[in-house]
Image: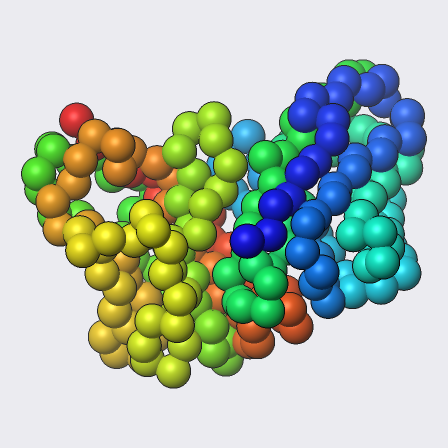
Length: 109
Length: 115
């Protein structure tokens, strides 16, 4: 079973700071998912990536398949970025996702 | 933009009662999932459904749980006799392909409270 670990668990940043959240997993995969969970509980998919880097607005996700590691970066952070960020990986070759515990980000104005 | 919709958003039920959680996945998606999140814990996989049958289930998904896609649009999760420990947020998700290939889209969740 894939073990997905995230760090840090909690992160507080000042508005405008550059944020990095890390994710490592134990079983080789071909794609990893980054998700955002808002205080109300809803989950939104941010990225699915299998190699290199993807960018969407101020969010950048990178992955190193050989090292089984991915990072999510937020540039010019804003209070509205405050949420729980979760990485998830398929369980070996099967379909369901194994979730990390999430990183709770608070951005203070 | 197409989205996954779940109803109800919040359900309170007595222990021992049956509950049905409803989901309408995105229309052209083929893979359907239920996940749950107990308060303060990480999201856990319950069951995946493809081609009108369960393709995988976790150890959590015991005989008290069942899923159906009764009419080609709705995807339901039934808990036959709820226990206190079933209290959680339940998320439905859908994708056009398996997890290694396709992005999963999640509903807003149903918060189930068993009293």
